[in-house]
Length: 175
Ligand code: MG
Image (cartoon, rainbow, N blue to C red; front, side, top):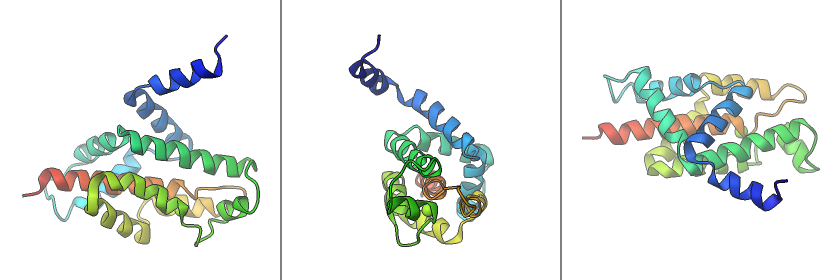
């Protein structure tokens, strides 16, 4: 029988592409497709990179999601949303998460761990989408307001991945 240590070793050994598959599936289970993320990236970079395509955006979203820091943030944030929905988080945190309390702020901090990988441009791109909540971000935000639903971390994570992918494209096409 596998011991806790065996399981721990096995999980650490899971390579980045395997974890990429896992987070892709987890996001899908929470109603987010990589295409939804790529659409935000497209709109962010279109003014600066006229030759941009959805394919390019999808490629950079994939690159972002292959990064370990990003995978860890996605796994942690999604887990907290799900635990809040299952009523497995104690007070006062439970009410803050289920109510998406505006001054909580840890969801944005977790999102920063994603965009940090791409420097200052990642930061400003994230600030922009966090305010505007384009596309899927608005949908997730609205859905999270329904009773018993929690998307407190998810909307920021999605925005951060999109912003990071936009920054990755910006770096590639910088002249
Ligand atoms: Mg949030």
